[in-house]
Length: 389
Ligand SMILES: Cc1cc2nc3c(=O)[nH]c(=O)nc-3n(C[C@H](O)[C@H](O)[C@H](O)COP(=O)(O)OP(=O)(O)OC[C@H]3O[C@@H](n4cnc5c(N)ncnc54)[C@H](O)[C@@H]3O)c2cc1C
Image 1 (cartoon, helix red, strand yellow):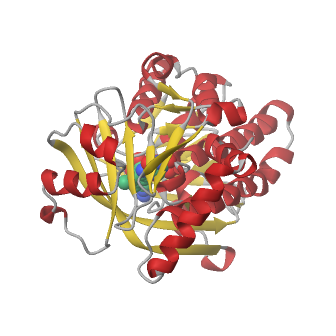
Image 2 (cartoon, helix red, strand yellow):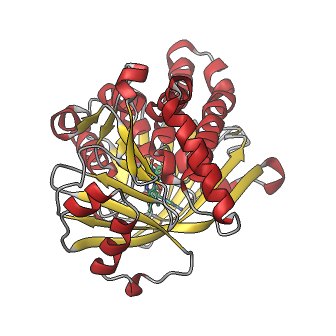
């Protein structure tokens, strides 16, 4: 089998890249080790920057998002028992879109199916080869048979645990990492959100986030210790703890109901440099991870795809390798800005085990400055809605 671009990973990065390439007449095949249903069962991100919205439109997969997504003009920072609104639109003229990662993955999969392009799910032992030489190829197994795809380029869109980054010699890779000493315990429940905008709460008992997927579906999180066990957290216990961390008006008005998803996610910042090795490109979570506090993980996958697609288009349409040569540097510049923002939001909003009451007071002073200074609020808003590509 031969294609122009072999894409490993059918998450948002792989599907988005695949669709843009298809629309531009560039052949591609997507391989994923799990099934479509498994991918669609994963509950993850939900806040889209305008750049991501534009990319979905460009891929021709934005119609349902515009119909069902919820544009948000602001969010709330809750601390010291009160809400403080950050007016994203008023400060930047831009907004974000609340639309679940599961939904946009669904839309991209439907679009790909309609385009008739090849995707292979439940492909095992996917392995990239010879990406440092002239003839890159990918092998995989399906139903006991080994297949080989020869290609011009390999896009490693296979997430943090994927095979692409691990295939690069260690000496060619520099990794940067910070592991945070807490996690997020999250639930998804069919209840109306406590507020029509997201609430990020700093509280002496720990961080809390009230998010949503629709007018009837809420996504709530609380900061928890890394050794917490899901089975110790009944829904009632979760809601009680969430209420304690919110201003009274929200705690009193919160509608509760049974959760249908509950999980604990660890928080980390991770970047691998560079993002290109010969003819292999790392894209999205394969190259970097951010804590979800700034809602940047999914959005960074979109900006990586933007730079890589631009480079591949230049290569195929204009026979220029300038864009693919610049990919890693362009992508990393934006990645590090988002890593910084996600780290600063995490640091400002969470309770750290070793900083005590002093740390809490410093955070409150920082938050107080942030909401009382237009310059500081604007800087926060500008990063939250997404820095330009
Ligand atoms: C629990 C959780 C909650 C999150 N919450 C948020 C949030 O609130 N906000 C936010 O912005 N971001 C969030 N993120 C991050 C966001 O979901 C990711 O940044 C986003 O999914 C990145 O997309 P991707 O396509 O790069 O990687 P992924 O979505 O991870 O897709 C990678 C794909 O590659 C496949 N794959 C892996 N290994 C192989 C292999 N060896 N062979 C073939 N295929 C392989 C996987 O099956 C997967 O389908 C969250 C992530 C997690 C895990």
